[in-house]
Image (cartoon, rainbow, N blue to C red; front, side):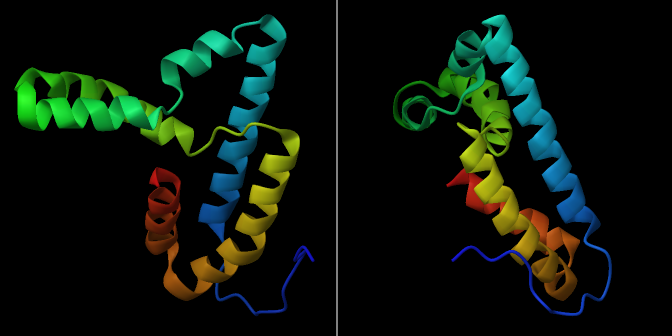
Length: 125
């Protein structure tokens, strides 16, 4: 069963959740536009999160070549962007329902900063 709502009284408006939902929708619409224009594949290849590239670059930087840290820092934006990329309409709808139902309660109980930290941590792996 998919939760649609809850009956917990909120202390304040979940502004952070509104922003996260808005950013997710905006980037998904941007993905759809890139798909229509045929630029999506090159965008995903350039900016998509590929864990093997990041872990390989970190390993190289630690053990072999300190200059490899440049590659690690170059790939950091893909870690951020990957938090908002979705593969299908069903994936984004499911994620946004989950974010709305549980995120607004967490935001009210734990605060906006904690919710942002949890969101970033969940997305990073």
